[in-house]
Amino acid sequence: MGEGLKLTESKAYYAVVLFLFLLNISILLPPFLIFAGQEGTASTLYNLHSYDHQWIYRSQCIFKDSGESMILDDCIVQGKEGEADISTLYTKNGDPLYNGVFLQYPQSQIGINKAEKVERNGMVGYKFANDTRDYAIYLPMLLTMVANPYIFGPGRKDIPHWIWFVLALVPLGIDGTTQLFGLRESTNLLRWLTGAIAGIAAGHYIVPLLNLI
Image (cartoon, rainbow, N blue to C red; front, side):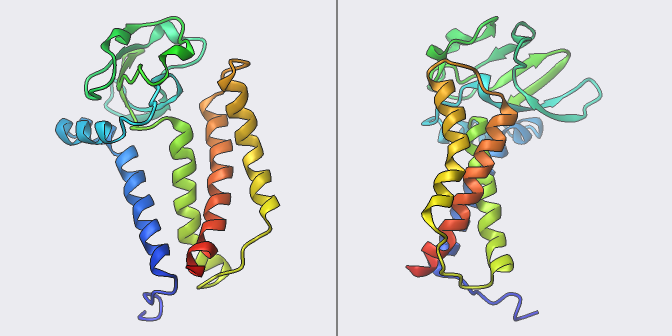
């Protein structure tokens, strides 16, 4: 048992893992806090991440349906934009101009439309504190770093060839760039897949780099 608790990685590794853990918790916790009646704490976390563009159109929410069941879903369903009534309640630099029902979500809203609450189809939901692509990178990165010493051995210092990291970023680059220039609008599923590939790759490279410090 004592051997299992032995610290095998560098101090820098544990510092980064702790930071990523707190970062992920601060992003994912707000909707659950609101449903638990802790709006003040949720508001603090939303504003902690107010630096992020946090566009609700590219975010996921935790909803409660009429039966009080919690559901993870897109805050706003593409093609059914008119079903969502959105509100900015917590983020201080979110513009209440964008409260209400919208049939279109132009990219000019990015960085301004930071609504957190969504009402649609009899459900009430609250968004995570960052856009989907952000925590689609952060969470897999954290899990990869935690799992790395168990899969590849403790104190790993061998760094894979850089080309594999570049290739892992290609799907995210294509998805993000085509979306950035208005060629298409991605989906949260694609944001998750491309973000997770990049996050897993980043975690795989960061571990040996930190162990070399």
